[in-house]
Image (cartoon, rainbow, N blue to C red; front, side, top):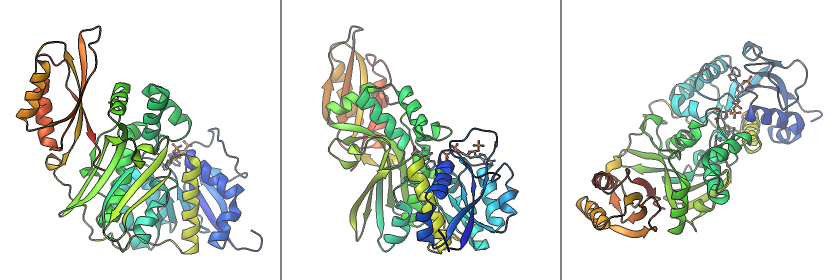
Length: 431
Ligand code: NAP
Ligand code: HSE
């Protein structure tokens, strides 16, 4: 904007998110300038391979593969760090902080696994690390938990935090699409991580949930203690049968405060069809926050892709420059210990079990007996007609039972002679 002072900004990484941020700063700089009170001037962009084709046009001479073009330029005060993974992302972040830059990142894996080290370093150096874009794309969840809700005691978070998995599950259900083509489409749309096993294996959602749990419950992120299960084993038949029972399968990220620690887990779960989380389809992210004073609040919005994520990064850049960014974690990171996990075997909930059995008299009685032996009661039961192969698909849901008891029941059922394969267990969400 004319007449405004300039603040010089750098970007490291010009992939899906970096290109989106560059386009925003170059084409819509007035918006961020209005908020920052200064013009944000894109001075330098650093990538791994300068010869790669880009879908964003940069002013001449600002693209390089040499990080020292940023770290050595004292006029650049603020840098968007948009490189994924752990290394070299961690070393790049350290180099930026040590050269006196405030850093804005979307890299949740890095913060969930190396957060304490990086936030401590930023505090010692008097620099900021802002990371709104790292969780739930366009939903302003970091600001909500760390600022707006800071006077509440947050008790639990229940969420959909991975756009790619949500997109895949939605495509499988709505288009009867197979898993592989739904994943291809998510990658084409720029939702997926460079390594999509991070998405479908539940790790990306777990990284995000660890950051939220640490902010909400007051500890350091503890990714090593998270229980993580992805959607790779979900088949179309599970989706169809769940639907017949009144549920939709979602990758649910849930964290709750427990005596002396927190339970942090990501797993596929059956969610009642009329529940808002079941209705958040495509790449949407959605989140319930439950707190002592606020009760329950619900946020939903675009969770992945260049547009929403880049907008969150650009807003963080403007906040940092305007001095409106508060040190998240940095104020208290010293002395914070990782939140210890709860005991999963003690957790009580309902489960969905899918069995394939041989068509024999007495099979169902054997299954009921195996469940009874483990102390698990049946809630509902659905038997499909005998297939040409002589096999019978059976689905049952259980009454609330401890995970230990359900696992015992599965072991007993698998041992029955008429049972063809280990029963598939999917939890029913406790929402
Ligand atoms: P991406 O498309 O894979 O882009 C990564 C960028 O990092 C590339 O431009 C790459 O350079 C650059 N890079 C890699 N190593 C480098 C190095 N040593 N020095 C300089 N640059 C280097 O990744 P993305 O999807 O934009 O994601 C970036 C971060 O945002 C990740 O942490 C991701 O988890 C997070 N995020 C992504 C989304 C999303 O929807 N995609 C949403 C929220 C958060 P080249 O281009 O030259 O290879
Ligand atoms: N791969 C991530 C997702 C990007 O699908 O949600 C947003 O963090």
